[in-house]
Length: 227
Image 1 (cartoon, helix red, strand yellow):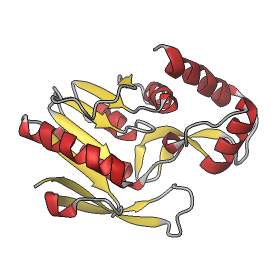
Image 2 (cartoon, one colour):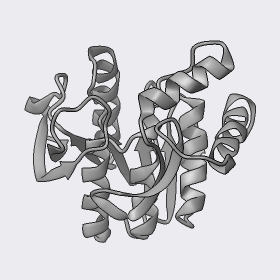
Image 3 (cartoon, rainbow, N blue to C red):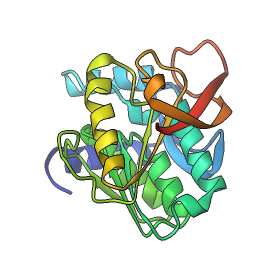
């Protein structure tokens, strides 16, 4: 690991090792819907973000990796409950965030797991969380969405249809991966840019949420694949 991701890894390791507790801290905890996986999550991601920006003296990427998003929780649960989907296969977790789905794939017996996220802090978080769960995950910060070949057996993507720009890039990539022979699974709690007419629902789950600024403690989440 080099560059910004290496710097972020050093920073997160220092955060985890620092004494003290409170809303602005990271804590290793079981994921609510996937207790087999432990993640370093923020007690309050917004408060943690504010403290880190104040300390850095400049803006930092939103810490999406510091919350266990509902779509990722459903996907991780689905993989652990259906290990035949991943056993012995090469898996790519897109927009991996904390690495929850990638770690679940590794625990379910995947031969190789790649967790991809363009945020260097997410790359660092995946590395730390994989270490905490004693699994091997290759974390990468490259932007893969314009590539033409996934070169994996299974592509998983949780909570990726949160805005139009992301949806317009993500769906063609997933369709190309499926056309090339990869299985594709998406986890989504009904976000506004989900292309529901181009996806088939495989399962749905009532998922406890740790997301900031969410009114309900449960989200209805679907696992889908390209139609």
